[in-house]
Length: 446
Image 1 (tube, one colour):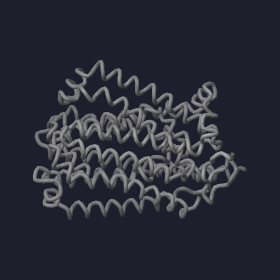
Image 2: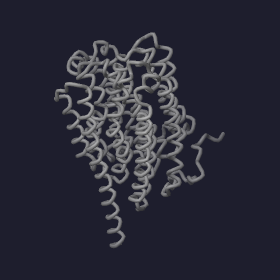
Image 3: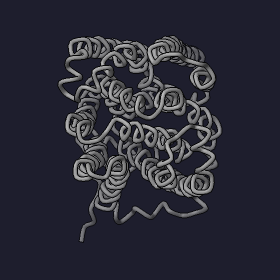
Image 4: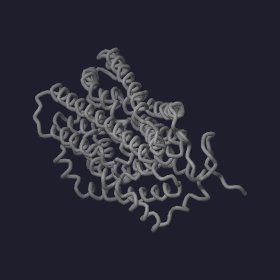
């Protein structure tokens, strides 16, 4: 009986080691559109449920959910030790699968360490970070969420490498559907309903990814799971964790710091109101970054391997992102305080002002963050290290500064992040320019 194989799209050769040629903008646009639609549906479910959830749960419940997501988000991006980025590099798929298994092993060990640490040190963390006392019951659960999201990153990179963007969409949708359902059904459990919905949604996403792998890879799924071979490949690609583990960890901490900072300076209730304003602005930013990053990584990696020009493509992408920022500003400005009050209830009127102040920061992040995959695509993984350390130091400095009002804090934060993101964008463009000059020199001396 013939075994099931990966369903190959038209542009992919039947050779097991071949890859789709994505070195044209039309192909990239098609892949990006598929990815964006899936992310929009998944994130749209969360946003569509907010008018109900914000009325059923108090602001402090969302403030606590924001803390949970921040802790998980900071740790989960490094749970696979950044081997998720390396999956796009090998031409041979068996080598990529060995990296996948190695990343999953490291992710599992890291998650167990996180759960054990939080179980033993919960009192210290609550006291230092000024978390609410109820954080004692959910801090040990963060290890399970970290494992699920690390697994998600590995699956997402593996599917994106093979241009299986419908599978990537499934990962996102099968996370959000059970999450929203459980949060609605658990409205009588206060913050526990929100937190359990978040955790179960991540686990359902992983189950979908495992089902997809078993369906199309069953005859050879475990063929690459040979411990010695896996360790050899992890060592061969050791520059990914060596160069980017700590910078990525610090960068994630800085990116997710706003919720931690607001809770630290102004308390969990104010954090819940701030979270609403942040969500409205961050929703389009997050879904575009999540949709485009893996498509860009696969596309730019192909351009780099083919020694094809990247600068023109980079400028076209920036133009599209700039139009997105303009549209985001118009939507938030039109919605205004009255719109927030109508949709989410009277307590969230102030969230509209928070959203407007955050627009420059998140708009500049939308311009820079999707293009950060340039460094992985051109094998310059260390290229963003200096910016990540600078960005983290600047944001964490806000823990030490006194702020008399929420508005002063937000304007200071927004201005700082905007300047740093624009510097990062300039650095990305400079890196692409230097790589293209190296191409020219190689052609001259060949």
